[in-house]
Image (cartoon, rainbow, N blue to C red; front, side):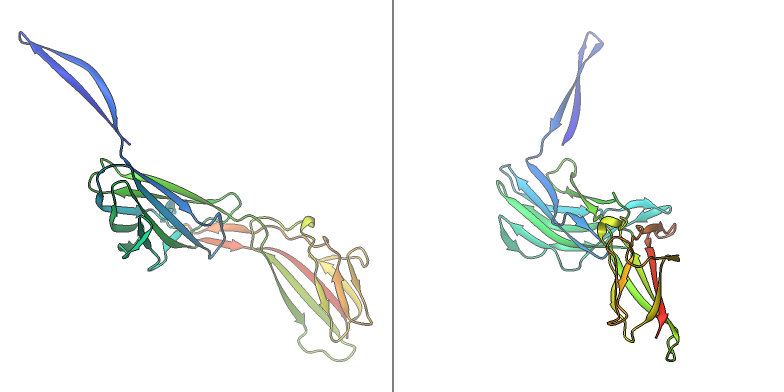
Amino acid sequence: MASFTNQATLRYNGLSVASNVVTGQMVSPLSVTKTPVEDVYAPGDTISYVISLVNDGSATYEGLTLSDDLGGYEAGGGTAWPLTYVADSVRYFINGVLQPAPAVTPGAPLVITGISVPAGGDAMLVYKTELTAAAPLAAGSTVVNTAALSGPGLAAPIEAQASVAVRTGPELSIVKSLFPATVAPNGQLSYTFTIQNSGNEAAGTEAQITVSDLFDPILKNISVSLDGQPMAKAAGYSYSETTGQFDTAAGQITVPAASYAQSASTGDWTVIPGEAVLTVTGTV
C-alpha cells in the first residue's frame, strides 16, 4: 500500500498562498500471502512455500516478478542464507490450473519472472527450499523470509513474510566401542557407550533414557561408571551373569543439550553435541 501527498497553490495579485497538504493511499486490488507447508525445521530439512496471489480488480496483471530473500541475514560482515532453492521445484497455477513453469533465477534472492494474475482470479506459486548450514539451530530460533511481488501496474512491491521455527527437543545417538580389541580368557574388557545429543534441548530424567545390551561373551564382576562416576547396581543398573543381559535403570542417564558455534566468515553453524559416557568393565 503506497501513500501519496498533494498540495495546491493559489496565486492572485502577484501573491501565492499554499493550501493544506492532503494525504491519500493507493490501494492495490492485488494481494499476496506466503504460507510455509512445514511448521518446524531441523538440519537437512526441506521447507515448501505457497505464494497466493489474488486479484480483486477488473484488469489482468501481467509480467510480474516475485523475489524471495531466502531468509538472508547479516553474519560475519556479510549475508548468510539459511535457505536455498530446490532446482525445478516451482509449480505455477492460474485459477487452480497448472501452467508451464515460469523462468527461475535460483540465486539469493530467488527470482521468478513472467507471472500473470487474471482479473477477478488468482495465481499460486509453490516451490521447495532446503536448509543450509547457515540456518540457526538453538532453541527459539526461526527462519524468516520475505517474498516481494513487483512489476507493471504496481506502484510499489507487495511483500509477504513467512516464519518457521526450529524444532525443539533432544536428538540422541549412541556409539559403542570396546577396549582392548583382542582379549584373552579371564582378561579384562571394557565397553564404552557414548550418547550424544545434537538437539537444542537437554534429555533429562523425564526422557527416561535406558541402555540395554546382551554381552557375548558374558562379563563377570562388572563395574559401571557414568561420566567417570561409579554407578550403583540396583539403583543404576541391572545385570545377569547368567545371560549377560545388561540394562540401565530408566532416568539414570541424562544428556545435556548441544551448543552451537557460528563461523565468522561464512555464517555457517557447527553443532557441538552434548555428551554422556557410560562404561562397563568386566572379566571375560
